[in-house]
Amino acid sequence: MKTIHTNEAPAAIGPYSQGVIVDKLFFSSGQIPLTASGELVTGNVKEQTHQVFQNLQAVLKEAGASLESVIKATVFIKSMDDFGSINEVYGEYFSSHKPARSCVEVARLPKDVLVEIEVIALVK
Image 1: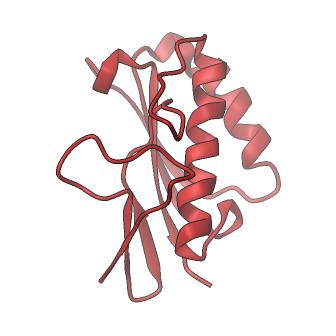
Image 2: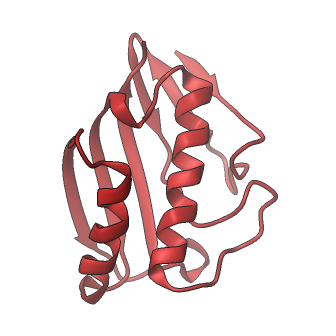
Image 3: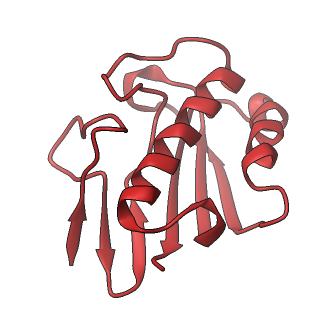
């Protein structure tokens, strides 16, 4: 198992890593809309989702993977009312390549953000 860390995404805010590689699979920790410097993006759900994808792209790159090699995404949202807006942004990043996905509404997310996404990807 190899632990992944990049300064291009926010540091872990607890006793966990940004992600791990096991064999040829990369498992990311959930990414929330924090910038690499740890600043919270407090805009609307679309702005927060774009920041989450910037973070995912950074940890995927560090792992030797990319959005194109993602095989499963899990999306956690504060309100199912935001599903359409999140889906719109999600579709900008996963347009031709469409990995498997789960989306669940949760009672609360870290730092009271509106969206968190984790992925599993193949490492090239």
